[in-house]
Figure 1 (cartoon, one colour):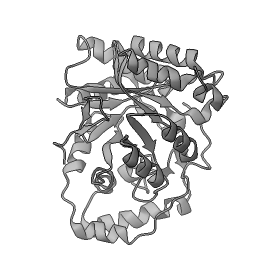
Figure 2 (cartoon, one colour; figure 1 turned 30 degrees about the vertical axis):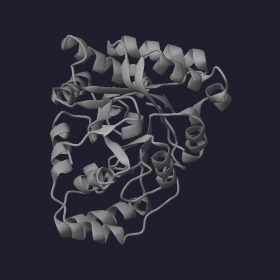
Figure 3 (cartoon, one colour; figure 1 turned 180 degrees about the vertical axis):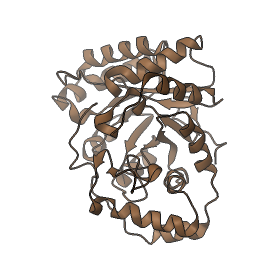
Length: 322
């Protein structure tokens, strides 16, 4: 499973099954409920890039630029982006005005290239159009989407994608544009299948799916008793009940919940890579162990008998970018 590579459209780029998400490395306590200092973040980035097929995903707005800045600091330590590794980042709106027109998209890329210390991006996504001041700025002629595809044509990105939350916003855009990839997060997990129709649409259109946040914002990675959060929100017992049903099955089959959550995504042939957030270096090795953990077929049969939600798990989330 860990040796496979999946092509990203017709770009010539192929990705390993695990990508490491770095939003937490930008220090986002409003989202994750904890702080991540500079040195810990850099050590985690070094651990990712030490892998011969290290694949990381970031964004211009993670930690208001701190994630990219910290990655860039490590890249400069290494004398440049290491060969064979894959870099994914995102075009973002202006975080003060929510402006997201073509000029803002271009400026976002320029900021990313400067922060990261690179000349081009492997996979460049348009990020969170649902939070733009005016979605028309994104979709109209000359808007942010047109700018994104020009960046690919100019050789500034090898592949282009769409990364957002709300499926109802993403689906019409995916139907209209020739994307190479997409990122969905929190919406295709052991307990929620909100993104299922979008994943099917991507399969039909030959768009590579990168499935992010398989741990539902950390619940499966850290355990519902010690980490009472679900999809970046403080969670009630009712919100955590589906997670706890899976945890009970994991205890019965002697499977770490993190391994189950990760492999649920990895075993789906429609998913090119699973993006797992990490916020300390030891989590990189732990992710690889979970990816290789032997899980019996009987576990998957038991999981398949559990009810799953199809509503948007973030519908009641109070969005905070920090």
